[in-house]
Image 1 (tube, one colour):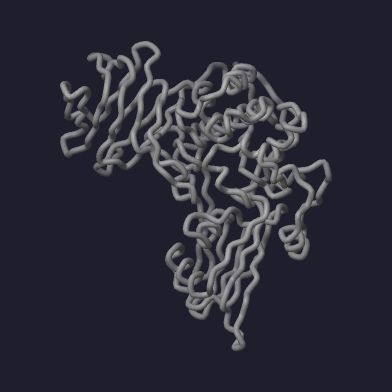
Image 2 (cartoon, rainbow, N blue to C red):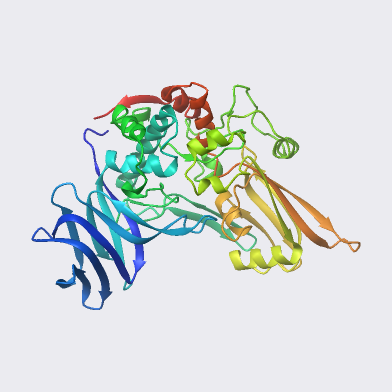
Length: 442
């Protein structure tokens, strides 16, 4: 299964003509020259041009690697976080481990951080959650994130060449789902599409160090396989099945779970789904406790306060233009939006859009979220109220929704509330991943 700690290749920057940063401490450049200080990397037809400390220049290299000579770190400028999400922004970030610069085949370069898995997890836990979060939450998240990444890498080793994006299309249907992005030069990206990773910039808490050390090498395991342990920000009261968001296969530890001590039944009908989404059921993630949220969420996630139940409104014209720009399809005036299939959490898997020029079904949940927002809707668990004029033509569409993210696996805000209520890390992960066990592999 696994017997030693792996080294992870994390893509931090991609498709750049130029990368700038600073080496804090001495680094070995391609195992030869020792360099440190500010650096600049450019891509040209001859290869990669690397300039450090204004005195050393290396050209005509397809790949450059800078390895720390000791405990040095490096800074990369203008790292984009929250790519295509509503909190997208740029930051300068610091990283431990080695820096690789590679040509990515389209006349640009990528910056990759080579780092040991446990060091990588320190940043993931601090980036996905506030580093001041309760210790048991940090431990639960460490075991979840560790399991997910290694399961993905092992699966890809067995299924080389299978694309991460899959779809089926016809004249009147487009159903597309996305797994981890297909990365050619590294294992995992540094953003939310894989796992949020912001280097040592975000490691600010001794509790994070303790969470990683006490759970070192601990994995969620089911039937002698490491679990593909998914997670999202807030499930909305019920988690969903794996197949609602991704491939059409049943994964026993990624099925609908009530995010509560109350056993809410899966939403089996459209009527139950609408009642659920428009209501405020008892759930761990149904919290407005600012103290808990400040402990748990990084600062930019705290900007999102309506995650459990939310509302978005569009005029008919705005919606038609938005859907056309995001889908590339001209529906004309959108007359009706209707859920054809939902998962057990209420998330829509297949959605019918009826327009004056085109009628089409779209799925799965992430594709739906992308079509109905300039970035992403919080989730696809929504109902739509249509306001019409006297002529029966829609004038406004009101989306009322539940949850934040795909809703499969661990609910981060729900897990946080469980931790504040005294649940231990093992209890938290076993609540969300039914049938999984914990096993120390190294």
